[in-house]
Amino acid sequence: MYEILKKETLAPNLLHMRFMAPGVARVARPGQFIIIRVDEKGERIPMGLAGWDAQEGWVDIVFYCLGTSTMKLGTMEVGEKVLNVAGPLGLPTEIENFGRVICACGCFGIGPSLPLIKALKEKGNEVITVVEGRGEGFVFWEDELKRYSDEVVVSMGDRSCGSKGWANDYITEQLKQGGKIDLVIVHGCPVMMRSVSEATRPYGVRTLVSLTPIMVDGTGMCGACRVEIGDKTRFACVEGPDFEGHSVNWGGMTLRLRQLLSEEDWSMNLWERENWHKLLDRPRRPGAKTIARPAPIEPEHSGGCCSL
Ligand SMILES: Cc1cc2nc3c(=O)[nH]c(=O)nc-3n(C[C@H](O)[C@H](O)[C@H](O)COP(=O)(O)OP(=O)(O)OC[C@H]3O[C@@H](n4cnc5c(N)ncnc54)[C@H](O)[C@@H]3O)c2cc1C
Ligand code: FES
Image 1 (cartoon, protein in one colour):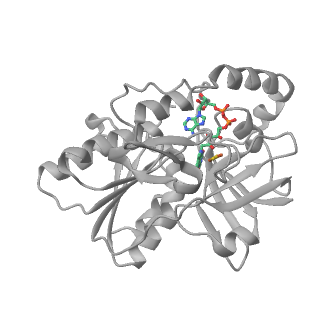
Image 2: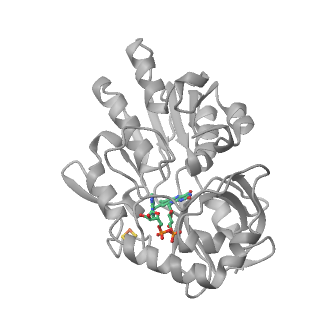
């Protein structure tokens, strides 16, 4: 059993949780993930590692409460225990001295970006962090990001309030002006990862994306996480989750993410009927508005995180 040591609300429906998991914390590396199972009836929930301390034995995640499993996890409190925290899983992100690196992140992706930015900086890279959010209340950990980045750009889509558009708009502008970018790494929802990949494609700038397909075992045996990368089928849990953004079949991945939509809705309805009181009790950030259940991702969306 793995104890919850910390729980905080970072943005509407977005939580930070810390678990005691010394075995994971000892060997974790940036870009890897864990799979959490809340109880013996629980689904296996993959979550990117947003931080860890090998000596104190804890690991951090940042997660969006979307459906049954993440809602169930989100209603747990400090001191309670989940059944499994398996990991670290997946291949770590390659960390080298690449030169000038843009780390684009949004929503829950801000979490796993933090250890990555720190590692890239330690290798001597110039790190520009571009954080995307629907509004001020959706951007968090700005101080931590600033500590390890050479520059932090906050992109909130709406240019009329002084923002530089979405992350893909900012990157396009930089590239149009002849700015040097050696590598872009993206953590966020598929819409954001796709739009950033499309922004860098015409300029041939290498772009790594951390894919989040549906997973089951997380060890390469079930095939649930298969994604098309170029002309090959790859298993994101053991061959990823990082892949070259220009080679991902984004349409195929989005369709696979939506294949269980009706079962997920059904499951959420059943769970809500018995647990609505826990949702009412859930602590919210002061002033945060209640958000309706997210609509499914539209593949034709042109850019911007948090379409969820
Ligand atoms: C390697 C990996 C790392 C991940 N890291 C994180 C993380 O750090 N933080 C985090 O919040 N989530 C992360 N995810 C996604 C997370 O695992 C899913 O959101 C979660 O499993 C959804 O479970 P659920 O039962 O709550 O929702 P479900 O009922 O399964 O889904 C509810 C709705 O969300 C959509 N959905 C489900 N999974 C995804 C997804 N992966 N991307 C976009 N939409 C989805 C469904 O189509 C449906 O509309 C990661 C996934 C992978 C594979
Ligand atoms: S999750 Fe089963 S093969 Fe990847």
